[in-house]
Length: 104
Image (cartoon, rainbow, N blue to C red; front, side):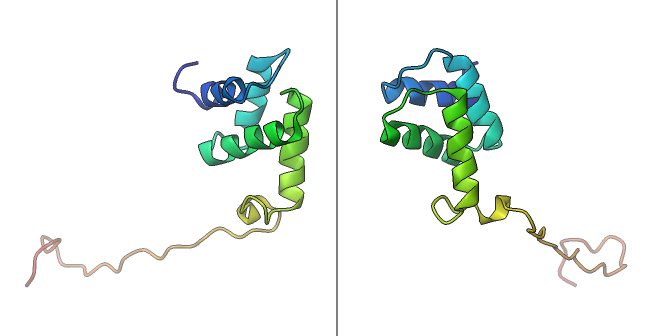
């Protein structure tokens, strides 16, 4: 589990001194619910520490659900329903064979 999002979550839980009867399961839930993004893993564990509660899968689920309901706190607007993907237009093709990267 070293070098994984789950390992990060577990290390942060331990580093905060949080008690947990299921640290591996809690770490896995945290990583899964925030799509393994370290920025958000830190936020979930920090929220657990701020609450002074044990690190449990249920608390992790609650914290993520609350954050999604109030996206302002963690800049989660892109995770909320109704978001539109960014569209990127393809570069224009000149049609000239062999002219890629050359100044003519």
